Image 1: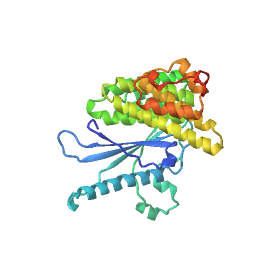
Image 2: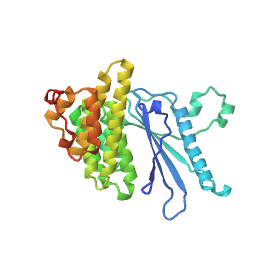
Image 3: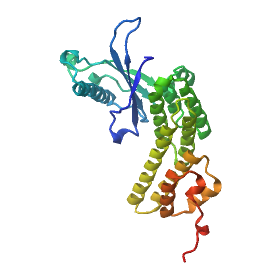
Image 4: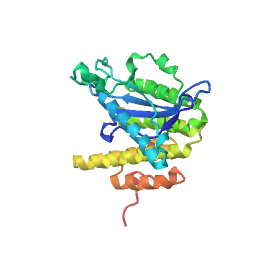
Length: 318
């Protein structure tokens, strides 16, 4: 699969994406010059703490979506009918829960069908890996984008210092990808940002995301602009989440919390570590000031130009 291309899509509904995420690869199959066509590799990263008995059904639906996307591609490109051939799909499930996986992976095991009807039930083989029962050194042998993501995923509940170390190692390891694999680098970087966002508290997330952003800006893939955009997108998401939380709770604290986090992330991404006095001013500011500073930070050429000042240093109204 050295020539695999990453597919920038997900078949997981938005309301389930905190519990699972997926990576999709498509590449040539065959060796020695033999013509083997292409194959999909569908990697499902399962974040739920306990085994899900419905896993075979979920895989069946996701694989069906994958083939349906191929059908739509045929129609879009007006592929001749005789040339319309589905590509095989290899499903891989990476389970991150700490409890032993005891539920089946075959669709037939979800049915009480008599033996004479089981031949009508779709059947396939699912490759399965229990992440917490796999030694870190084994994961380290996978010098691929997925292997690096799994290293961090295995340490998602580790103490902050250990997770920072693993995250730095993974980001450094991604530099071993070929320059043609920049799409894989971006996908895994996004996955890691979302992983720490959903799995760690606000303070830890800010520190961990900063590691990813710093590594992105130093990457051989020269994706500084993409890294800044990634940070801006997450900052805006945090701001919107804070506003939504404030509306739901009927209080302004939720909105201000999101605005503070969003502002600090933009400042750190654009201008480097945020000075302590600026942090203090942000902490003491109201939502109106935070919004104004956030807008200014998106276009300012320097931290000083954002003009963040503590409330007690603002000029008195005339």
